[in-house]
Length: 412
Image 1 (cartoon, one colour):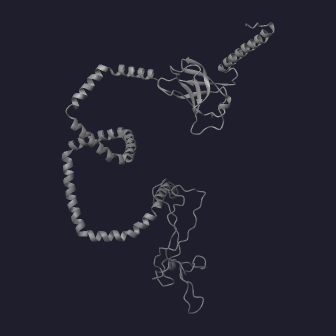
Image 2 (cartoon, rainbow, N blue to C red):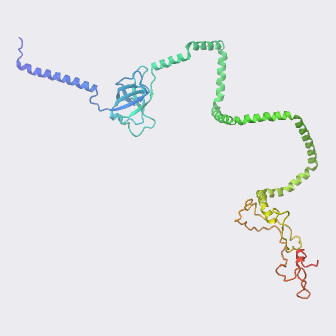
Image 3 (cartoon, helix red, strand yellow):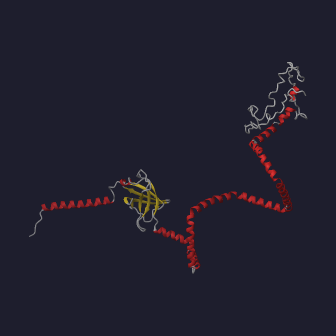
């Protein structure tokens, strides 16, 4: 028997059907919003590259250490490269250092590309900021790029010429396999001997470049020297007879010198040995010889003005008497070499008139007037005649003439 549906039964069913429909619509709308990332709070970044590649598309993945952290939103091909706009999860961006290396690549040759953030060797302490512009380090080479490069290469090398070259090489090595193998074996042995000397070879090459640069710098001087050598050679040829006479005279001089040295060699050696002390002393005081001679030459004009040699012929002197020296006594008056002042020019050859040369006391000999009476101050008169003895039996003091003659009171 059929059941009759009442009005009270259809009401709840309609409400349940309407709720189910609303629920399905809400689920679909939420799925669409989730698929469109309407609830994602992502930050934008910009990636600059010389090219993006043919397989790079919008909504491509952005990864860091292999984990997806965002997606590509836009790709713009520009004159100087490509600009790729991406969006990244801000929480994941905090783990990406600011100096991260960016690359565009794919897992397979024909696979879709992705933007990968790779950690550097020394990560920066600060994370990558939102809105930053980063440069890519490399872009994976694509098959089309390989074909394009290969096509350009084939166009450049001209296949018909390459074929001819390979044919010539094939003909050259045909039947010479054993010889080529032996050559390769010998080359291997040579390389095994050369390899331990690679560092020394590199140093030699580096030094060789410096030597080559040096020769390049002095090449003009060498060429001038060679030109001068040509002139000298021509001069020698033109004066050949004179050079022969010079060589003959040199041979005669050599023979004479040989006889001289043979007869007087021992005496010359002894003479040179005796001169060693004098020459050593002269060498020690050689610095002051030059300044002394030049200084004397500088004083010539002044001396000529003082003595009259410049304004009139001859020289003008003022002469006078001085106290005579006593007689020589041995060994008291032997000469001494006790001066040790060393070489010193004392302002010569251009002395300063305001400066005074220091007084130097040297022990180089005896005092010739030691013990002699001062006849100029102790003798009242006369100077040239003997005084009468002040006491009976005592000799009179010497006269000035006796003192000058070194007679010490002896009767002339």
